[in-house]
Structure formats: C-alpha cells, structure tokens
Image 1: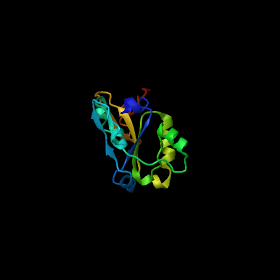
Image 2: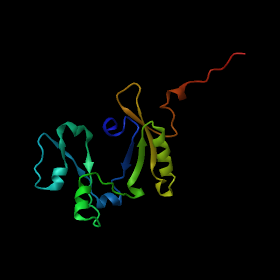
Image 3: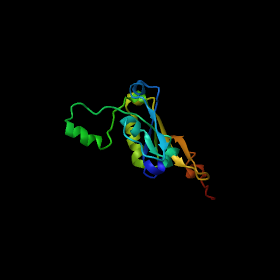
Image 4: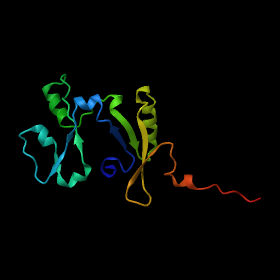
Amino acid sequence: MWGHYGEKGEGVVLEFDTDSEFFKRHEPYKVRYQTKRPTVKNLRDALLVKNKEWAYEREWRCFTELPRHLSAKERFLVSEQAVAVPFPFDALSAIIHGHDGQAVMEAIKFLENPQASHVQHLVCQTDPRKFVFNLRTLEDYSHNHSASLQPIKANK
C-alpha cells in the first residue's frame, strides 16, 4: 500500500479500531475483486468491486451520507470526488508514517491532544535485507543503521 498511496514512504497511514462505536454506525464492507465491471443495479454493491489485479490490497470500505445542507447540484459535484469523513479519536488506534520529517512533526502535534493519548505513533521503514516493511515506535532507533554504530574513540 505504501508504494501506491504512501507517497513513496512519505505519507501517513491511519489505523482504526473497528470495534469502536464509529464502526458500529459506519459498518465496513469487504471489497470484492473480479475481472468484469459490475452492473449498477445496487450502487453500494457496485462501489465494492475493484479489478482483480488489486486483490492484494484486501480493502474494506465504509459509506456515509453526504451532508443534507448541500443543494442537489452541490451534492452531485461532491459525489464526484472523495469526501473526508470526520471520525472520533476513540476510533483511531495508530498513526504510522514513513521517514518524512514533516509527517513526523504533524503526527506529534496531532497526538498532543489529550483525546489521542491511546493512539500509537509508529514509523514504517523498508527492511534493508528483506522485501518487507518494519513498524517501530518513534523512540525505537534500532531501525536506524547509524544508531547501531559505536562511537570511535580517538587514541591519545
């Protein structure tokens, strides 16, 4: 997912607690992967289908209604684009980001909110030896090669 959506390791992933009240009201639906486009007999069913080539994503989606205060024209225009849905702090379980310093600072500011005290702050790094990613806490420097180097003592 990092390769497609994570801005080459500079993006942010939000991990959610699907047992939270938010997800009881906004039930996640498993995406189906197939080779043919769906017919639009049922809009929700059609929105839960992706090309089989994306099956490795194992995606789930939630739906919500657009704000009622929008006019019919505005609702149509908004439906043509992604809509951000506010979620409560208790639905969030972790913030995972790549190596980008700006993302780290933004996450730290966000996590200063007392309501976010339960949220884990993790860093995603490419493993130097395997084709995997490693998740570490921000305080864990073992992923940093320079942290494993011993200081050189000068001879007198």
